[in-house]
Amino acid sequence: MDHPPEPGPIAEPTPPKHLSNPDLYVLSAATAVVTANAYYIHPIIAVVADDFGISHAMIGMVPAFNQIALALGILLLLPLGDWVSNRRLTGIFVAAQFLSVAVMAFAQDYWLFVTGSTVLGFFTIAPYLLPTYVSKRVGARELGKATAIITTGIIAGILLARAGAGVMGQYFGWRSVYFVAAALMLAVSVALPLIMEKRDSGTVAAPGQSYAGLLLSIGPIIRQNPEILLSGTIQALGFGIFLSIWMGLGLHLTSPEMGYGVDVVGYLALFAIFNLFTTPRLGAWADRVGPRRARLVVASTQLFGVALLFFFGGSLWLLMIPIVIMNVGGPLIDICNRMTFLNKAPEIRTRLMTVYIVMMFIGGGAASWAGTTAYDLAGWHGNAILALCMSVCLWTLSFLSVRGTKKGARA
Image (cartoon, rainbow, N blue to C red; front, side, top):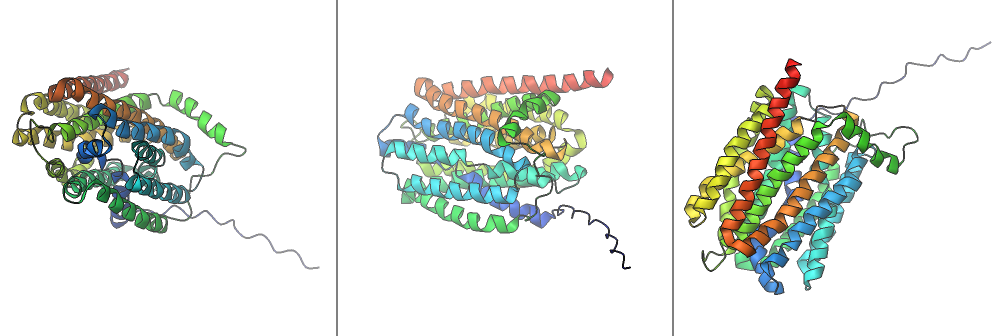
């Protein structure tokens, strides 16, 4: 009598692909393109307002609604990264961004332009999904470096968006900016799904878990990881400082008082090129000294730079000093914040990132509108005072974080 063959050994699941430096830089470049869309408006904000015939305070609705919609999209869509293939999600979100940018390029009505920008914000998820994807595919000792490389892509996207939009807006009109952006998004929507790994380890939902259950699970995760609220608040302030200042600069430098074109705003943004070299190195430094200590050091430096804005606003050349300081410090604060939670269990990292990014963009949306309103009410000095108040709050929270960590270590 023949016996049935004994079952062979169960195949172990293939471990996730370990990302090499070239892999990280390819993903970083894609991140740059998908990030840039939210920042094209910065240098051209004045000419867009003039073209649609609206006030400076009203044009602030464009970045404000974009950031708030992004926070809502992060809340509703980013948690799916712990449940659905990151590759599939990224392809869907990037395609939606392409369509939104195309609407902005062709919009003849201000409210249609606002709608396109708002929908664009809702689907700008890929830049915040990719760091979690990367964190699952690098060693713990490489987390700061890998996060810094992806963050460098975000920096490059912001840099190219602001510098490129300023020059193109000056010489070819502001709509040319969004035509080029749409072409870049079309290319990325085709290429990015090919770059990412097809099988997405660690993104399988718990048995019987629904989408609503996935969202509701965020609450218990916050209770178990309360520091995410501190890191999110610090980033909300840091991002708010960045957006409020650049909203103000776009209006201030093109005002009759200063008399520059929007191309000059773009040229000023080129100082962020230093970040492409400093951020990976500073990310490795944060690995050595720890994210909380590094964050306090950088927050102190940034506070000094923001304070200079009030006194240097009348000179384009002097403004370069605080702008360089802020350009170097801002991304590193973000990296340090992320390092405080991207070392947690892989299956909850996307939801922790959701909390962090939602807080970040609520702060950024509020500060965008506050920045243009402060400029409308009190000019450049009003804008600088708003940024200084936020910077003091950021430094205070960074200090309390370090102090709390030391007390916890002694307990």
